[in-house]
Amino acid sequence: MHNYWRQCGYGLLDKTADGHLVVTDAFLRSLLERPELAPVAESCAGELALHHALLDHPRAEVTPQQLAAVSDEDARANYTIWLRFRQRLLAQPTLEGSYMQLFRGEGVDVPPLLVQQLTQILLRHILGAEASALQVRAAEMLFRTQKVSVLEDGQVMAADDETVERHAVAAGFGTIGEMLKQGGAPLRTAELDVLGEANADAYWQRDESHDLVISLNHGQPALVALCSVLARWVRHFLGTGVAIAIEREIDDEQWVWHVGLDAQASAVLNDLYQGNDVAPERMERMLCLFRLQFDEPSVMRPEIAGRPVYLAMAMDAGGRLKLKPQNLLLNLPLARLS
Image 1 (spheres, helix red, strand yellow):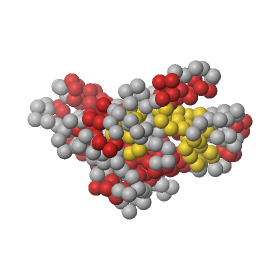
Image 2 (image 1 turned 90 degrees about the vertical axis):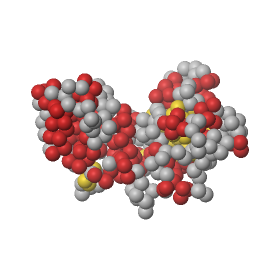
Image 3 (image 1 turned 60 degrees about the horizontal axis):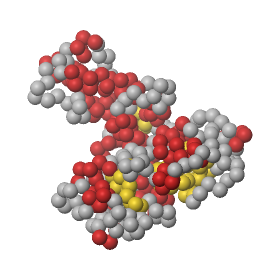
Image 4 (image 1 turned 30 degrees about the vertical axis):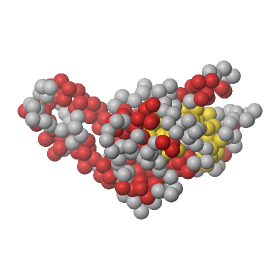
């Protein structure tokens, strides 16, 4: 039993009888304490008054006059964003419903940082306290960009992109950052903290440091853990069980459905499905292919019930992997949404 990601805000939310999350005033207050909104020494009287009023009543209506009284343009813009985000959070009875609604319509209109926080909170809830360290580390891939490096010996390593940038040449970080920035260093010459089954317990002391590397090679436990995370993500939101496993290739004359887990993979899968030529360098950036099967084919569209859904993930030209877990919620061939 582990209580991880304590700073994400999960502990401030309530739960419904059927296991979904509900936004609380305490959670809204925590958003007001973010650096973008917390008052500073230069904050004007209007900004201080608005901040105090919202801390007292985080669901209170804010008038145009109150916003106009915030003299700093950046602070005023941040409050406008916060109010729009609050509106999105409270638009549905549960956080799950609000999260799904963010991606419908004309597109997401709140900052990616806030969407990533919601994703992290929802994953914390879905995985629970009994998740393995490798499942939790794999889940980070769904809300934090990864920097991927293919080493000379063929190992495919993923590290947190922000951490790599911050510590690339910092003392005490070993050579992981520089190795991943440059690429191609043999593993035996790099001082890496690679998370695996043998040292999995190390994660729990560093769960919010985002400084552990995982291998994305076939047969490695991190990919198996990712399959489990994605399957639980689908079950929680869509109410239907799925099994997800790693595939080597799509050798299927009746290939009928696919979902890219990121923009790069979506584009490649679309081209392959349509019979278009795909440049070798784009294929080389494909990191993994998955096969998704529904436990109950009857939940699928009748014309394709029982057929597999192929998933894929790929890094971009800069070696970054930016997964979009919402793709799995919006693009599966369901007869109806739960």
